[in-house]
Length: 224
Image 1 (cartoon, rainbow, N blue to C red):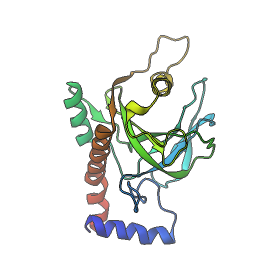
Image 2: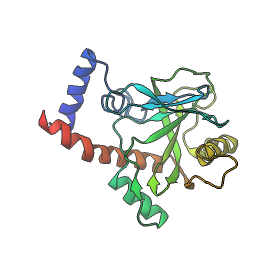
Image 3: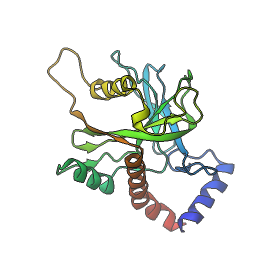
Image 4: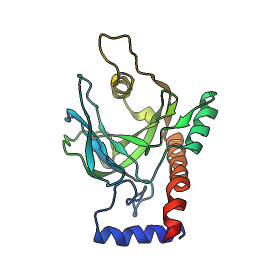
């Protein structure tokens, strides 16, 4: 099956069954290819970290939040993306480092909004404006930053340079500290090596799509 046939197959299947948000939802909105579909796993009001169960597409509890760190934005994944060889090669080129590898997960996305959205397991339309280049123990773990489409406060932003520094610092602080255990010598091996704008965010997403197609499209859909 080619990509158009796969898209049509997923569309038909979606009318019959609940699609897996990772595999069964298009990356880009059907009506506007500049608008990203994002599946939200956790919200700023959650005291438990949820994540998608890859096999079923349902949310599962990953772990309770043991400490005071709370995600300062809607947080989830970009459908039909994956972090593997192409994502790692690009990051090694950008950082000058060797031995990096993709984290074998969908690409993560933080969605900024002024709305008090306290319900996860939802799809939102958003506009990517940039991202953080993050490494977690040698794994490539980029965090795309997006704004909720038509949001009253953030909706006008088109690039990371439009975003207030205080917001970016909150996001950065969360990702650098959420795995740390207080009063111990154990430090999480998480680092943010750079901040990038919209054009590079689109590049990261495109590489994630290519890694996904290499991993899943050829493996599964070629059998249909």
